[in-house]
Amino acid sequence: MDRTEKHEFVSSLAAVFAETSMVVVTRNDGMTVAQVTVLRSRMRAAGATFKVAKNRLATLALDGTRFDGIAPLLKGPTALAWARDPVAVAKVAVEFAKTNDKLVILGGALGTQTLNADGIKALAELPSLDVLRAQLVGLISTPATRIAGILQAPAGQLARVFGAYAKTGDAVADTGTDAEAA
Image 1 (cartoon, rainbow, N blue to C red):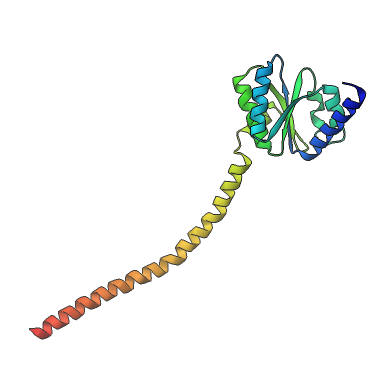
Image 2 (cartoon, helix red, strand yellow; image 1 turned 135 degrees about the vertical axis):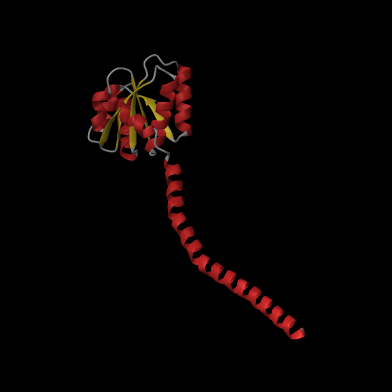
C-alpha cells in the first residue's frame, strides 16, 4: 500500500465512522480465508461490514471521531465491524464467535460509549431494531384496541338488554293472549 492508498483508506474509514452508530473490535488470530468469507457474508446479510484494517491506519481514522475510545483495543491482529443497527453487528459477531474460537470480541463503541466484550455480548442479546419497532407498534396499538373494545361493550350490553326485554315482552304478550283466550 503506497502513501496515497493509505491516505484514501484512512479518509474512507473516517467517513464510515462518521456515518455509523456502532463499531465492534475483534481479534481474528488464525482465521482462514474461508472463515472470514463466511463471517463477511453473515455481516453483509445483517447490514453490517467486517474489515481487517491495519491498526495504525484505523487509529488515524478514529482520531477526532466519537469512536476514538476504542483506539487502545487496536493491538495485534484485529478487525473492525460496523453497522447503523447496533444490535445486528453485535449479534452476528457474538454468534460467530460462539462457533469459532479464533474470533474473539475485544470490545467496541456505541456512539461515544465505549463497551467491553461483556457489553457487546449484552447488546447482542437485545432484540433487533426491526423487532423493537414491531413491539413498539404493538404497544401503541394495544391500548387503541382496548379502548375500542371498551367503547363497543356498552353498546353490546344495551343490545343484549333490549334483546332480552324484547323476548320477555314477547313472552308477556304471549301469556296475555293466552289468558284472554281462556
